Image (cartoon, rainbow, N blue to C red; front, top):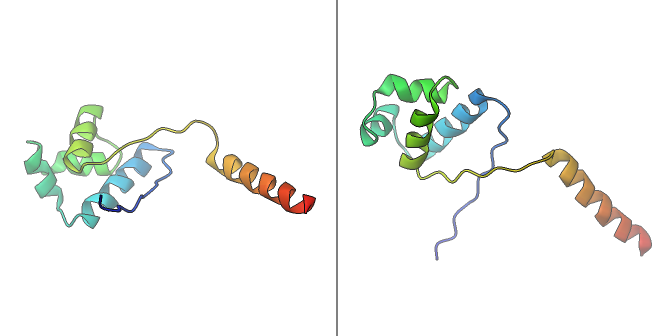
Length: 95
């Protein structure tokens, strides 16, 4: 099995999601027109999604075309990281 690099994007706004999609598209060497043609939509629609203004339907078509796996995490990631670090520090303190 091929080892794929995992990219994690922290999404707080529709614009953040669009920026992530744009980065993934560009990393794959595709233009907005390439993506639009692959899902039977117009290039301006792809641009709208990448700028946080698209519809959910358009968003999901693009996500599927780019073979993006979306995940959802609850809670504050920064707090989770801090909590893990604190636990590690507690273990070190015991030594």
